[in-house]
Amino acid sequence: IKIKITNIDIPVAFASAFEGEIIRKGDMQVEFDGSRVDCVELVTMKEMSEVEDHKIELIGPDLDEFEVGSKHSIAYVVEVAGKSMQADFEPVFERKFHSYLNCIEGVMHTGQRDMIRIRVSKDAYDAGFRAKHIGEVLYAQIKNEFEAVVDRCQVKIYTNPEDCTKVRHEIAIPIFDKRDERLASMTDEAVPVYYSCIMCQAFSPSHVCVVTPERLGLCGAVSWFDAKATHELQPNGPCQVVTKERVIDERIGEYEDVNEIVKKLSQGALEDVSLYSIMEKPMTSCGCFECICGIEPFSNGVCIANREYAGQTPLGMTFPELASMTGGGVQTPGFMGHGKHFIASKKFMKAEGGVGRIVWMPKDLKEQVRDNLNKTAKELYGIDDFVDMIGDETIATDPEELVAFLTEKGHPALGMDPMM
Ligand code: SF4
Ligand code: ZN
Image (cartoon, rainbow, N blue to C red; front, side):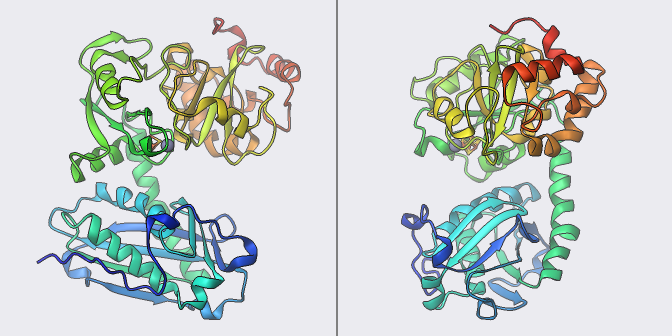
């Protein structure tokens, strides 16, 4: 028997109206900050016998024991069991946590996986909000939304720094790595279909992402496996099957059937879209891209800026300035929003020559993608340590200085065909 939970047992309100609520430093009782200490959120599938439905366990001190305004570790693990449950659904549930926790009055959540940040307001705390209520919300929402596949659900919340470190490094990261590795070995050619995603049409009404194994959604949070799982969980939901049988142009990755579905899902706003080109019929962007890539005419290449980067780029624009001209669900040749993982993809700007076009990235981003990007460049061009040829803000934010650096390094973009 399945019971629908309509009332969540928490001392504050729960509604989508609170989703955009911002909690300022001065109003915050406590903060969990994954960029400073070990934090993680995880969904993991278990055997039916291992899960006691609606068990919410707090392992470690509660919010009362933290000083007002202090930063702490937190790790919450949601264990689910069900006859129709699949491990592929885990990341789909995890992705929902952001919206679930933001619906709590006086709670703010950002990020995903082990890069999360949560603030609890003084008002919520005074109303009686405590750590176990995070578990109550996750439990109730998962049971509500995914009752078709989740028969039992329990939540473990860790607040001791040692436990959080252990859960993050010994349990969660190996699982995240396994998910990423499985995707890394897949190619677009090896799968029969792609998936569309229109989750962002609430903000960008004509935007459609086409998600392929080698090109994840531009938010960085929807891989081909996630889109597939979302489709299986909700056949009429935001992710639909996209066939790719009628090729128009292999080089830029254009298909008649892809165009048809994009046209339908964008209500006619988009006629045609390519999967692998930034110049010809590029995919549109909503507003939640992890990165933006734009052409840099002096070097014949492209610069990439990630959302966390606050400084100037050689394009003469900052990330917010680039975002304002790239978003909104319209095609802007020469600019595209994309996920971080896409940077090391063999399909990244394949039509224009691939990752060899990348001439500049913030230093931090270079480190994040270094190993995978070096590997791709080695396979595509036989170049070793390609990332060292790419400029960053410590080398140049001026196009002429950048070209001088690229020339000195013998960067491959300088010898490629002009993009315009
Ligand atoms: Fe879906 Fe694309 Fe929005 Fe990500 S950015 S949620 S893949 S529509
Ligand atoms: Zn979006």
